[in-house]
Amino acid sequence: MTRVAVDALGGDRAPEEVVAGAVAAATDGIVPVLFGPAELDSQGLELVPSSERIAMDDKPAEAVRSKPDSSLVLAVRAVGDGQAAAVVSAGNTGAVLAASLRHIRRLPGVARPGIAIVIPGRRGPTVLIDAGANADARPEHLLQFAHMGVVFAEEILDRSNPSVRLLSIGEEPEKGNQLTLEAHALLGDADLRFEGNTEGRGLLDGDADVVVCDGFTGNVALKTLEGTIRSVLEALRAEIRQSTRARLGGLLIRPAARGLRARLDPETHGGGYLLGLKGLVVIAHGSSSRVAIANATRMAARGVEHQLVERLAVRLPTGSPSA
View 1 (cartoon, one colour):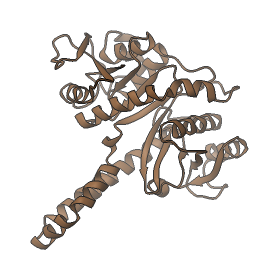
View 2 (cartoon, rainbow, N blue to C red):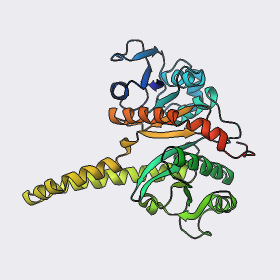
View 3 (cartoon, helix red, strand yellow):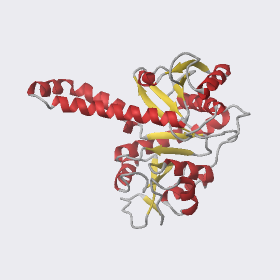
């Protein structure tokens, strides 16, 4: 039985969609535990009452300190205290990170936790890390993200000897800013299957099992991809409605279109792992629907089942950089 703490007040569509998603994820092996106000309709799930809420526009560190009884902080603390095996929140990402550093803490040797997101590539899924935890990073942090991404790809995506690429503005080693130039040199000297740079346009091709970048670049790339996918699918739907012939063609391609949408939809995975901590944390999209919350909860339970935290603790290289 895997107990997953769920921040019922996290996200733009909380609490209704969050509660519905948690209910949908509940099985004999997954036990979602909601953290929210005492009057919340938990629909039969266990509820841990909280009296405060951290808003999406709150200053993360300040909010974590000033709102210790918030649903977000209590849900994260449940993992740190051993009351839950994992936590899921679609709330303020910075606050989730700050609360996790405060109550769960980093694994020994980890300088910066990184958000690992699965991107559905044409040749198979790709792990993008960091997708938003660290707006600024040093070259040695990117090297550590690569090692964490490799463990993720092996344990969750079942990849053998995963390939690693560095996100940059060109494939040539001399392309990029100072951060990517120095990170390229470190990655090339590391005990990794490093295959050089990749450009943003190659992310959906699945050119690498792991793509490494700083959190600012990764978050921009991720949201650009998600926005582009959504716009293209909506434009296709609008075109299909334009005429009788188009609607007929739409009926013929509907199975393929549904399959493509399911593969590319960010809600299929629900969120990303915040790797590098002593406990399992899944950060979901702020606009998550019940489908995304359910998948994020299942993702959290899968990480526990695969002992992702324990394997990271064993396999990350020693002598890692300081924060």
